[in-house]
Amino acid sequence: MRGYWVGLFCSALLLSLSQVQAKGIGNFSATPEELMTLPGYCRPKASKNGNNMRVPEVKYWSDRIGSKVYSHIHHYCHALVQIQHYLSRDRSEKVLVKAALNNVNYSLTRTPPEHAIYPELLLTKGYIYEVSQQYDKAVESINEVVVMSPRLVRSYVQLSRIYLLNQQPQQAIEVLEIGIKHTQSDYLQQRLQKYQKLLPEAEASIGSN
Image (cartoon, rainbow, N blue to C red; front, side, top):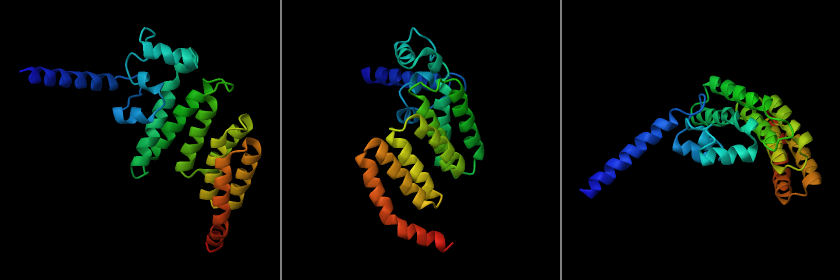
């Protein structure tokens, strides 16, 4: 009998959680699996109470990243879910790319450039362009980060990868060399060595096209 009531309680709890997830802030909602892949501040935004400062998790993230940025951050969270959906399907749903870019741009216009999360928004914008093969726009977005935060290793990793995908291996190597000068990163050095080994093969492939 006790097992019956435990099962009934668990079922009711799961139903309650699913209802909350379906009523997130704005249009943003996410499954428990998706939330595990998103930044921590996205979790409260997937709830209808995501702006309620009496909820400890909401107040924590609002205080940590600033109330003005937090109040709009669900657009960025929504973009991350949209690009996941795009990548997990056959990539024919270009509307998801447009929607994700719109959400990231919305967050960018409402986040001060000096805020710590601003480079993250730009890197994600560049990634959306990258996976949708809009390489020139991807380079433009990541270069903004390089100018703003020249010691951020991730920007050189991402930018060099974009150049390689766009069949520009020499530019990819040059980006890594610049990154090493600014960051003294061992990871970038390892990546440079890897790219240098790939260069003859990559150039041969380009020449045969």
